Length: 185
Image (cartoon, rainbow, N blue to C red):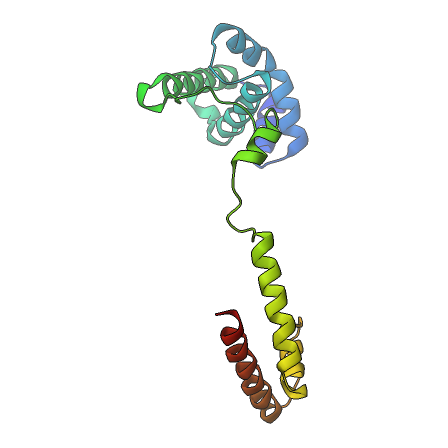
């Protein structure tokens, strides 16, 4: 049977009370240390295993039933050991073994910066071509088309205008778009 204060601590942890969670984790941290010394999970350091233990503790607190006459320490211990076995089993599965050892991005920041292409970034050559095309477009537009272009590129757009004026702006912008398509192609 659990003392009332520990049972209340478990209930508060299940309700996502951070202070209660921290206190409960501190109380059961010796179990975490014991399993960390006892089992090795490839690719996991102390902080990773502590994080896994925190998730297991929260899950255990949410699922704990005092009526089952099992101490919370035993319940948490079994859940943590099972989670570690799952991690070891997943880590050792042949089909999941990486071809090369895993390394962090921070360790090889310059290597990855040179190797990984950013498809969303435009090349400087494309930027110059588009910039020149926009300058040519802007110089070939009428004052109404320039206003339409500026409105469409602004944050508010043309929503503040009267419906009749909106139609004229949309038509002027479409003329700009057609001129731009002719300029860029």
